[in-house]
Length: 282
Ligand code: PAF
Image: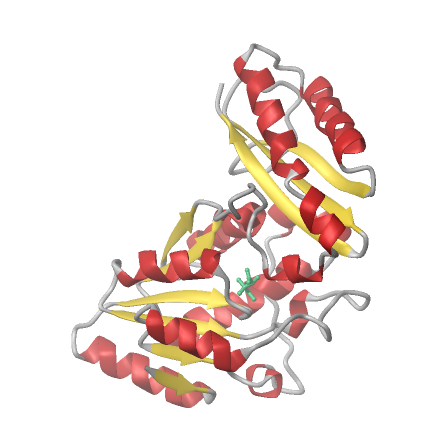
């Protein structure tokens, strides 16, 4: 497995592969890998001849009061895991190498980035789109794989790739969960033992709503209340940032769950913000 930090070296290696007729898959990450990331690597491994993983805690997608400085990092461990999962190249640049001091170009999909996480994290998706567009420009992958836990991110990157004709196939993969149902996230390590023990209530709330939809309830307001009441009872220390019913691609709010609808939620446990979602089938 190759480890590169230099942008020109990455571009050169990927160009060499393409010249040899090899296809390339990319999985962008911010590192501190968990089983969810590894499942993305395993899937991506089967989609192309070469697998590139980027590990970069992208400063431009963090707000001024967010956790950029304390975001968990462990590159040596990440490299071991990547090697064990058949990754051919890890790209782990310094922030200064990715962004020139006079960096001035941004990629944004404001229509899809305004609601859900975008409402409480202004500028977040602009940072995500910009870094992923840069990675696409460097690697020029045939395919890129992302997790569905960040559903909004996946929808935005799909639209960016389509609108800018970037020629990359975007693949989304199901949420990887702990045995008790908590969605895997690098941020789960911030949870106190009490918070961690109660956090699966978020997933249980989503399943409760799914059950109600299957039972014929279509009123999004009532279903939302059901989720919030469940959390208030089972996870009283939580603060719901949002629990929104939206069209799965357009991400526009829906009032009636009478067609496939995404219920996306963000919940604060102390200072930790956890996200999860469920695609409600009617
Ligand atoms: O999902 C993430 O980890 C990040 O948002 C991504 C896609 C690697 C961009 O920094």
